[in-house]
Every structure is written in structure tokens, then in C-alpha cells.
Image 1 (spheres, one colour):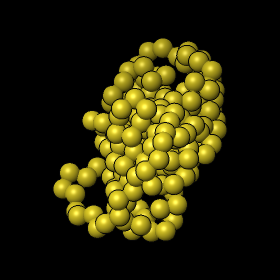
Image 2: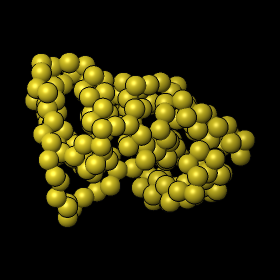
Image 3: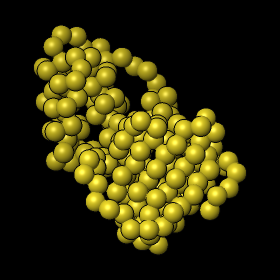
Length: 187
């Protein structure tokens, strides 16, 4: 399965085929910029993703920025990983086929017109409203994701972007931002 550089989407389709066949082994990706990524498959399930020095979700985000790559699959049993970091749902969905609709996760934020959230003051006062919107998109995990976003930033726009990054499609991301911004504008 070694080949010349080709569009990343073709490489990821090859990965998806291996997953559908319930394969186990190492899927190695080399980029045109001399970066490498390794995706560990265990019975067709993504066990771990690395990209250069990144792991897990951040590795998938970095991989999403690649335009061309080449890949090789090395079948074999995968041993238990002690320091394994599980993938988030959005990253996993992107690897499972979301890449077909989104050539790069970076396009999510580029495709959403920049509209700074108008409310000022303590972002915590808007938390309940944002969590309510997030709940309809993310389900029960919305509370946890909101806790994480509100603890890592005091900027409402950054908070919305962080929460929205957990959605699986660019369209969901756009709808979430529009709905959250509308709720905040009404406050």
C-alpha cells in the first residue's frame, strides 16, 4: 500500500476500508511536509492517533490540515497501550467519514462568518443559555464540555468555538454558533 503522494481524502478512504474490514495494525501516513501520523487499528476500531508530537483529538485536527500524503498499512496485533488517550466523538466521526464533507477541520471556523458575540461582562452569566443550546446538539455531554470551555477561557466567542468544535459536521457547527449567538444577542 505504499504509493506516491495523493489527496488526503484518498488516504482516509483507504483507512475507512481497513476499518470496515475489521483490520488490526498500524496505518502509517507521511505528508508532503515531512510529518508523520500513525493510526492504530484494533479490529477495525481506531485505538490511537498520533501526528508528529500530537495525540488523540489534536492529532486528528493536525491531520485534517494535510492536503496530500502517502500511506502504508502494516497488519498485526496491537498490544495494550498504557498511555492511550481516547478520541473525542467529533474526531472519531471525522475519521469515520466526516472528511468526505469537510476537507479540513479548519474550514469549520473559516466557513462561519466572524460575528463577535456582543454581550460583555462575566461570561459565566451566559453559561446556562449556552449550555441549553449545546444540549440540543451534543446531548448529555454538553454540561461537561461547557465546564471545560468556561474554565479555559473568559472570551464568549472562544467558548462558543471550543464547544462547537465537538460537533461532527460543519453544518452543525454553523447552526450551533448561529443559534447560540442569537440567544446571547437576546439577553
